[in-house]
Image 1: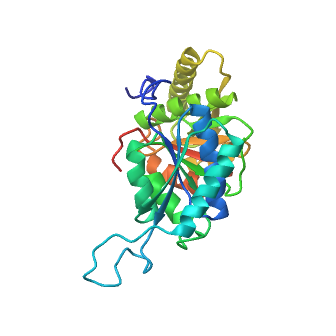
Image 2: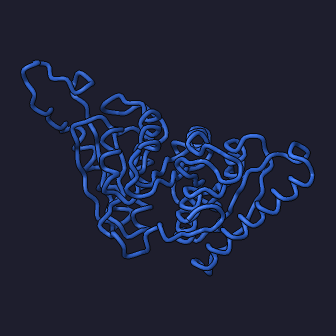
Image 3: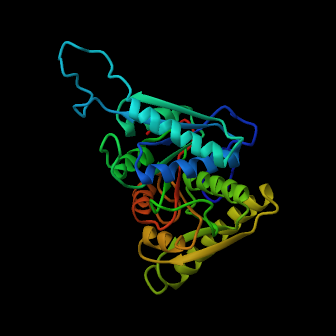
Length: 306
């Protein structure tokens, strides 16, 4: 795999690894409860179980026992358990066939979700907001999980975005292997949601270097890249509406954010240099996660070690 030869086989087929749950971090804050709603919807679309996970810190805030000789783990919070049970009940009321499990884990929320991602199909996090129990800033948690997870991560943006979301699924395409993975996940999402898929590639504005002949050659390569990606997606999802968009901009992240302004979901690769523009997708995905006006799926491969 590599270059413009798109291979979507890394995206698990329906029926593979069906025991992997959708995991969401819940701390009682409004953004985390909206994230739980998105996670429940994602789990229902995938026919997967849903795990509501609350990572709690020691009362001192850093997992340090009050007594330095007491090395035991802190006890879970009854108030947090009540919050988790209520959230689970609310979600089961909306998705009666959904299997929901709740769990408290002694650890920081970001590290807890990264560890949970080793066995997850998808991890969902809110984008910001103070945690109702631990006082955590979900913005920092979402950044940690999006950067280090071992499976795809859905960051719910804006923090109050409800489901179902409307609009197409937009994915950034640059020819790298992780971009290919992102296209695969984006196609799966568009097919599940029954919405169109938009393949977006960002190139330098017209009129800049290189010269006309080099620009024409680069343009033909971009055309082949987008056509190849679209053909592969249509072959795997024959009923899916697929369009390609060439975005002219100096920087890829703002262009992708703008392209996703009316989208249901924006999908980006997790890292890796783009085959055409030499983009460091890590920095692009970070910028998109911070500034997008719609939910963002960061397409980590399963088993990725951040």
